[in-house]
Image (cartoon, rainbow, N blue to C red; front, side, top):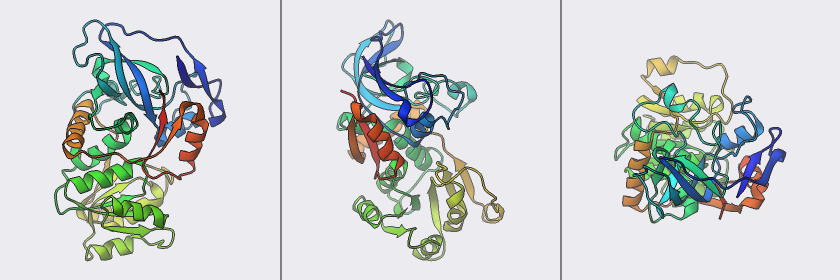
Length: 338
């Protein structure tokens, strides 16, 4: 079977399409014909050796993928041959709060081999059935980006009609957060450096868009749009470069979901507003399988369609990762496997 490996050393130039023996499922395992994968920022860091420099190579990268169950091993009861499924990012996190035991050494795309392969074998506990109305590419976007956004809005905070949510950027997690927040009845403000992307966000239901390239102090119009009160919830993907302004945007008693660190993980920070305004800063790391199933039920009930920006063939994996690294995408970047 064809796979993509990081071979010999880290770096985009070391991504190689190569052959591995066809796998077979053992007891309680599931063989999946992978149809599509989707890229996350974590995958870019892993490929470059920034996420885990001690990662052993070769490695099949990419945590997110979906396909069809081709065979099952003895004892499998959760799925059957022909089911359309996605792999869970954290194979060991089935339910409850995260623990080191549930997450350590159980994540796809590092340290475990990921989904950029024609076939994968996973434990039955590490797969979920996907909504039937989704294409394989759309289903492949769910395991990390969608589940992270859902966890921020539904697992950590129960978003309700009338809430105001500020979404930073228009990448995969941010666009899912926009879609889920609107589905929950919240009003959404979106920031971007592109007026074109802001217009697309409004087509998805965003009430307001703010271009942070032309409005450097973007927290000011956010406060104005909320009559000075601030938003209930910030989906924070920028890290230290945006967190100070996010704290200015959130209302007293509001929540900042810290999801990404695109502008860097470390910087001096004045924590006084967190204390004095009773702000909750919540780290969000994907979610357990039970939450994945809950999210899929909501997606199916509302017939929500993930936003897929571009789909690349497996042979063009270098173009796919370079396109995402350039930040050109709106929503998700996918790779068609078969």
